Picture 1 (cartoon, rainbow over the protein chains, first blue to last red):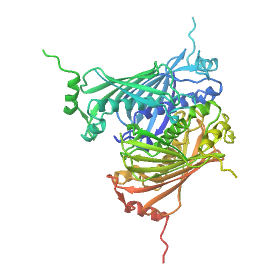
Picture 2 (cartoon, helix red, strand yellow; picture 1 turned 180 degrees about the vertical axis):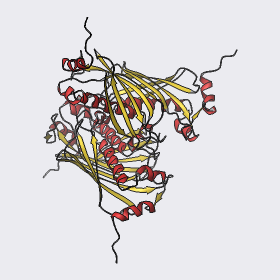
Picture 3 (spheres, each protein chain N blue to C red; picture 1 turned 90 degrees about the horizontal axis):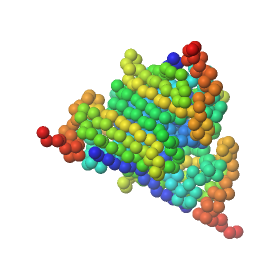
Picture 4 (tube, each protein chain N blue to C red; picture 1 turned 180 degrees about the horizontal axis):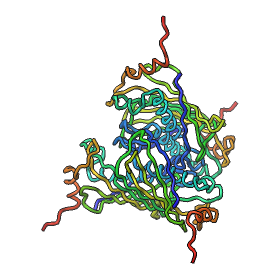
Length: 137
Length: 137
Length: 137
Length: 137
């Protein structure tokens, strides 16, 4: 398992007229957490892209249990539970103080700079394998 | 079934450095389509809120089959397939020309202005029942 | 003078907890109007970029006289008053019904795909000159 | 003078297809800095709003000298140079490492929860006067 935690402070611009953070921003916060997760394992996403690989979304989902409010300091946890193959699945949980507000996931493909699908690039595979060692036969 | 179609033109500000529309905006486009769906059945969401009811998200999901690009004119279809009860489920499909780019859904609660859960408000129930008539016993 | 008008409907996601459209979105609306202005004179901005030219912002300003609200249908007027040289200045006015809500401007440079400054590209110069003919000596 | 510094890390969602942070987000970053400035002087903006006062924008401006890029860590400096009266003027500078990228300002009114203009509220006036003492006659 690979796991990281990021801090987000809800911006005024992220609130809506209901007085809560608008749901679209949760997907940006997941992305912030993803950025920190990849940095933590030694392969910042900016570096991934310099190496010619992008990771566009295939699928995303989110469940909202409680709202968040302007200036709330949130903890966004990102986790990879399984060795990525042709795709990578990341799970998220967002907390405010002790409360779980949201869970979600994103599933990504690997593509080159022309947006053509790639297999898991070897520079990523090697890193992920240190976290998810192959079981011997 | 209740159904509407909305036009969205991808804004430059909605693109990201991958050169495609960033996924977080698809949830805003779903919302635009939701706004038009409710207007179409005679109960604009601004009116719903004036009557003291908001419809925060409980859950959302999206599958991305193909990307969209700056200045693409998209069609966002919103559909309610079932009579709403304590919650309302809306399904979305986004097309560019003939191509299906994305499908998604949002599930909403009904709350009052203090964000307390409500049952389906009667002014909404009456409208929805004209589209989903009760079957006689 | 070159002038265009665009329609914008304020999205729920664009509101903030004050109940009005957040000011950052006005700059996105200006951009929508800019897109339509360039399309109107026959050189869509997507085409400008295909030809290797981008127009990043050098400066922007905005005055807010009255707020706008969710679901307001706004008219965004964009205008070029002078022949662009090394930079291009665009002025904007946003109206809701008869009311002027906002005025603003953006000033842009011309750069190549490596973000290096360019002089006014000839394919743009030719178009602009049809609107701003040179005075004979 | 009142002054604060905030850190911002450019989000992927904040980039555009030019590969740089989209200008509309600079106004959100100014707002983050404003939030921290007010917190620093002991009157968080969330508290200001709880006391029934909002500070909508009257005017904003920004000059962009150099672009910022995904994952850049930026310093956003906010400054109040003069005692606020009917309006408050805040100046901003954004730096990446040693480089000044952007300067800007925002000018705000004080309004009540019905968006009606107010004079500088006394709870704010008292705080500001500790930073901008009245000169004796």
